[in-house]
Amino acid sequence: MYQKLSLALAATLIMAGAAWADPIEGNWKTQAGDTAAIAGGGSFSITLKTGKHAGKTIGSLKPAGDNKYAGSITDPANDKTYSGKATLSGTSLKMSGCVLGGLICKSQTWHKL
Image (cartoon, rainbow, N blue to C red; front, side, top):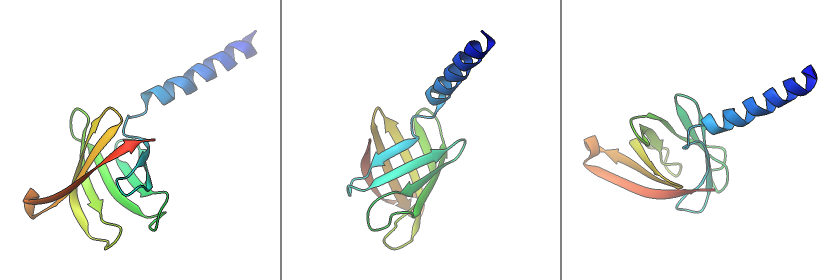
């Protein structure tokens, strides 16, 4: 009986852990068509999983309010790092990187896989 209870408790905790994961975590389809993985806890790293720059870490974000994140984003083509932010809306993630204090920005929208 205790073994069945332990297995049920373990399964419940595993399922609850998945439910507690931040919604930004997971695999995302970039605007270029590559797959990027976002993982972490209090701070989230962004790593390209497919494409020309697969394996390259291209960002680090921290929570900055309701479904908003801030940190740095690196352009994998030229390795330049920009001030970055992201806004999560359902299964879409609007990413942007800016220079000159936000005067010049580029953005793109990613979709959750």
